[in-house]
Image (cartoon, rainbow, N blue to C red; front, side, top):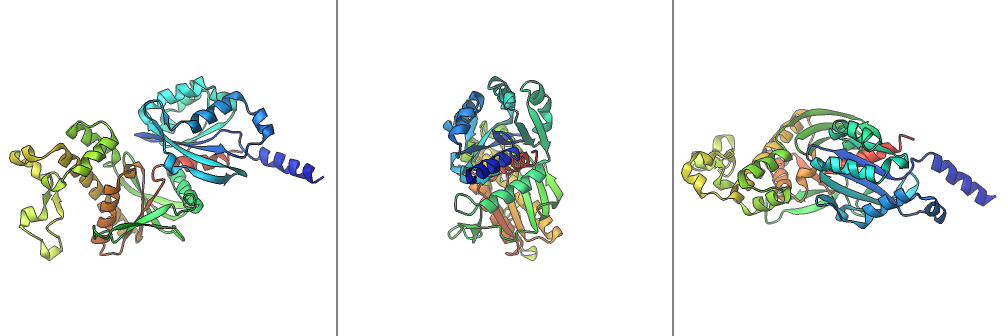
Length: 379
């Protein structure tokens, strides 16, 4: 009788769960982010019932770290032994350029994704832009979701789950002292209110008062897409990794005009130190200085200009909304410690220690995680 009850419970749980595979997708202006839940508790019975298409998708996604020439699985971000909707498994994080979305749709068609009767929960602008192709070419059931809802829900979920036994969130201790500045992990306990700065191709800034109560305060079109676009024009680079590598080797002060270049030192009356940037790219008006700068200097100045602008807008929003906790997320921050430290420094310095910047390990994937969580509300 006990076995019978267990069987009944399993059947009931099955009815409340969507069929595998479980995906969440965030189709942004530059990158597509995909999260995939790999069940690790498959029973022998399930394995026998598992259709070949489902097995081949599972094997393809979990046995590769690269897909074609541009798809990447961020293995270091994988979340192990998660229980979602009563199933135990691992969460995988995959990204590829949005320009390759047509190839992804064709792959979905070739792997007969539609035969699995699963719903693809997608967010980001591309969920609307590519909807006709996803429905007609790949014959997929698509559920479009608001990207900012998904972003907040995904971030709060991952923060609550933690990062394989460690904290998801971190900050930089003593950001104004380069010698002693160090990364410290922390939990976003009792996080509200917070200012959430999402830096993707462009930037959105949200004031978040609870999981379901938030407003978009403002944004700026000068974001990660601007940094990469300008770097491609100014230096001839072609990837984000290349642009960051160049920036790490450059010196922005050769490109920017500083307060000391104008005043010969600090502007004491208004507390502006001589090292502060008075005019981004201001030195490039001089032919002599243009000839003296390297591509690396130009990449660094581009990074500093975009980052300082985001930091400045975030600080004004935080003051305006009377919020002292600022969380920065988005793929502009991927492998970009330079910008994170700049943002932490700027907030701390210009607010005289009143504002604090926080960062998240899964920075660009929260929208996709939020979309995956919505899959369980479809049932």
